[in-house]
Length: 95
Image 1 (cartoon, rainbow, N blue to C red):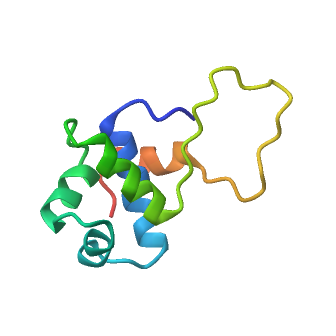
Image 2: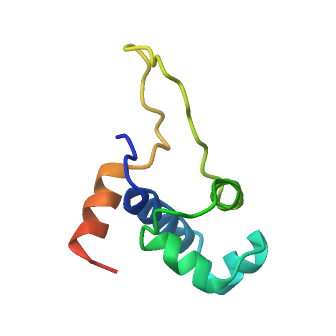
């Protein structure tokens, strides 16, 4: 699944943070941002600074794949995250 919006990316960040059992304050301190900034990102704030977003992704172990020509035969790793399910859950407003 492609992450196309800030809300999609925020949902992925929130899901991974929760899976790692990190609260917002702990992650914010680790990255060097305020808890309020992280809350806004998780809610899809569209104007977050890219450098800070990349630090959050790194802190959570989320890899960003910018492959513009993915091979059709490439298999999905067994540890893949179901981004479609994460985004659908976030759109339904479930915690």
